[in-house]
Image (tube, rainbow, N blue to C red; front, side):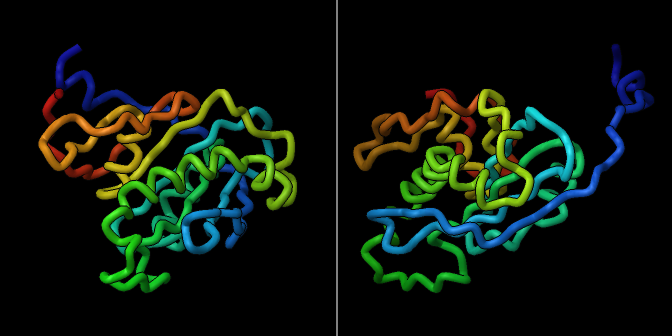
Length: 187
């Protein structure tokens, strides 16, 4: 198939279904300094729904990216959007001791969402028993893409330039990285 064949190919997109969206759902977050607030969007119908945990870009929150989250939800995905500590809505000052570790807190936020899926299920009307926990994707935009990539196995460099800690999570089976920073080199 050449480039012209691809350009003329129709992509089948399912008919959108009504969605339910609940925010904030508050998850316990010991050691974070405050609980984790998330937005959950899901199709109103369907079973065995795959999940997308979406990490926002720097400064955003669970309120950002609603058109994208709603599109995914209307097409069969449960979308969970945590608000990371760098969100403007939280006003974390630069001198806060957590600030240099925000990149780590972001990854922990995403894992915390997965650890507390039971809480999320009972917090969203009609969602209980409808998740397919074997089909989980991490997605993110900009710094959120970096966060998602770390869950998929990307590593940051340590202060000496060596390969940093593996923070991947085997529960995540796929990723969507939008405008992700980085060198793009294999280490």
